Length: 448
Image (tube, rainbow, N blue to C red):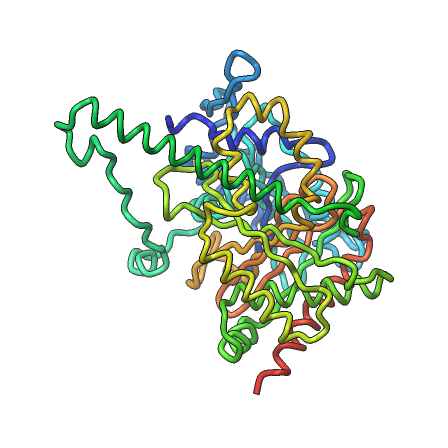
């Protein structure tokens, strides 16, 4: 596929876009400057760096006919200053000023006529800190790609550090023609037909798994009407606690995080008068396939479905249940099962997405109740204009009719959880944030 053409999955994210369902990812990064802060200088620095990143200079150009695909085109009037704003918080924003301000900022859709990103610099935080708020539309890139783009805005990493922090991707496997340029057209045709047939068989398997995984009514207690209003919460915890639990009970750090979130959701449901034993909540856990495919930008995603055992009271039993589910997913691989829905979406014609994706998106609650994504960050110290990066809270867009999206990142010695909620459905997102800390503490206390 030409690098300027949007994939079918990229187009699907554009088709899901709406006033009440903006499809952008976001992050809130806080920094500690070494001296007095000059936001004007910082804005100029970001504008200069953004202008050097090709992915930030392009906007979507829909192909003809209208139900065809789309391409990225250089924005002839590109001005990075139009994408970067500055704000100073005042006491009128409430007790959690940054979360209140960010809730309004994240609810605003990006302009589809311009490059699909936005930066907001925010001063007025305690201890002279400032925040950088970033939006990237999901059509532009996935979470891993967004991290790579953000690196282009931060200060340079020393060459030796960069080599240690960058995960080496496996080399792309050569095609049949590249392995043997002298191969006959018949052999090349046979290889192509084999690939197409294999993809068709794999896609049929994913489609059958999606139909089998669709849950009957009554639908999830977290299903809600779409709303333009958002509520955000930030949760910070010691990464050493997660590592201690993982070392004691096995599994991966992500298994521990999913179990912690299951415990938090259980407490939150009980506090709201819901019966957590009435129905297991299910999470869509995105999986990056960037190490398995060769492409630049765009979305390279699959996913796993993971039942969050909110009906289980014992925290260790919850962790064991999550670990078993995720191990089963990994044995099957990222190209099988209903969680591989992004793979299937990427193989459909773009015209199908333009006709049917918005309607199909309304059925998301039949498959999963929330999205839980883990955004990997390097463990090296990062900075912006000499200011040290302290915290990074990622945020995932809300699927249609779903009340909550959860994103997690680990940076240095801390675990950061970003909770984005439909404000009409979850006005008490702060209580859910508190429950996350309690759930991790309950697991940690069971460690010998």
